[in-house]
Amino acid sequence: MSWFSENYEKAALGGGALAAAFLVFTGWQKYGTVGDDFSAEPKGMGLNDPSVKNSDLVSTAKASFNLRREWLKGEDNGRPVDLFTGVALFVNKKDPTKPVDLIKDEPVHPPIPNSWWVEHRIDLGFGDSPQRDEDEDGFSNIEEYTAKSDPNDDRDYPGLISKLSYVGEESVEWVLRPGFEAQGSFTFEYSDNLRNANKTGAANPVPPGQVFFEEGAAKGRFKLIGSEKRKEMNEAIRAEVDVTYVKVEDQKPNKLGTVYEIPAMFRKADARRFSHFDRTVIFSLDALGLKDKEFKVEENTAFSLPPGGDSNNYKLTEVTPDRITVEMTDKDGNKKTYGIAKGETGPTAE
Image (spheres, rainbow, N blue to C red):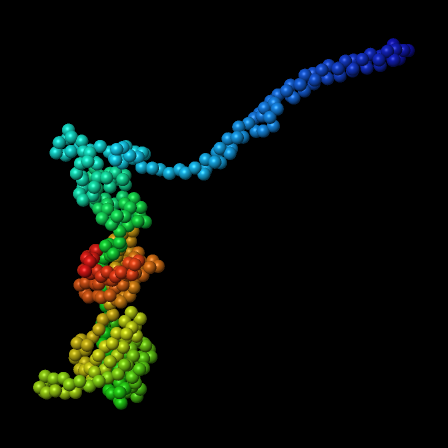
């Protein structure tokens, strides 16, 4: 029989003692680490303070959002001071040893005062500074100064009427000729320089009060008001004769209410004496990047500047081959009339 078999109980007792010793050693190690864990101060916390470290700064930060923060102009004994950039220094061109005081000295670019350049932070050191365009809205510094608009804001600019150009016109010359009369009713013929023609037949003369021409370029364009006879000198026979004048009212929207008095049966050779024009003006606006974008407006029609806007406070009231007249209505309802010569930019007040 082996020793282990004879001494089994002793071996078991010895193994148990070794296991117990190991557990005691392990427990002793854990005891030391537990003390360290519970005695350590958690990050951001005190031993006896459960709050987050520096949490009181949160309320301070939130309160700072309610503080009034605004940029105030700097001032030094009445002199404006730019708090962001230094003010450029200049010398007198007549005496290089003498500096130019932008506040006390005479304007560098009259009539613009030096303070205007400083206030708007614009370099006045160029010979053409008044003609320069800081915000690229089509208006120079001198124009912005005169109009009291912001030279650094392309949404704030002088009146656009000053940049309106009369480029050209498209005209339609037309003639309306009353024909035969039948108890106050008349026949009519219409023709224009675009070779359009309309005609009412002799079997259906137009009675007073009726709008006529059922088709064609002049469809629904005219309304017969009535007629009257007048005494006129006929130079061919050197005697007075009765001439029937026919009154016709225009129904075109931009000419609605215009009345033409036309002699009946005038000679076709005299058609140019009784012709009229439908004129459309071609405009351009030399501002806001629209110089190369032409737009058209019919005579006696309201329009907006810039074109396509919601406020039609301009009206093209008269058109001639050489000149146009534009009426502007301001926000207070006051009207002002301007004339623009063909090929010119910017009208003159009348």
